[in-house]
Length: 114
Figure 1 (cartoon, rainbow, N blue to C red):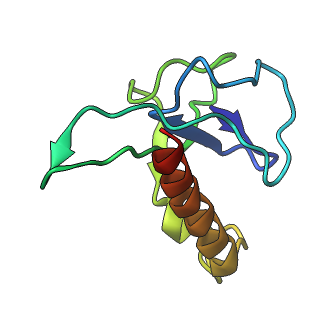
Figure 2: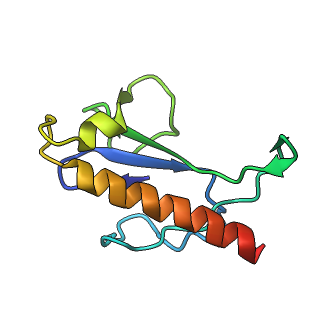
Figure 3: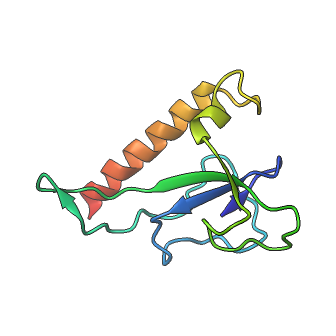
């Protein structure tokens, strides 16, 4: 989980824990690789679909540390709406498009390597 300056927590799922180099308190910079997508053994239509999920959440104000995702107290937001131009946070759609292509190309590069 990565908490940004505004307080939102970005929860990333299906990253290989052996490749995540961040520790609690580390700063994350734009473009920094957080980890590799883990091997996903499910196949659909004869192909493997290695993938990642990303949630954007607001932690309960009484928490002093973050519990696992999906426990009572997290407030979840639509990540696309959060990043849309004119949205309530001021982030714009170009950021989302850049992020989409980062994930898209990471997926295919990772798939070709493995």
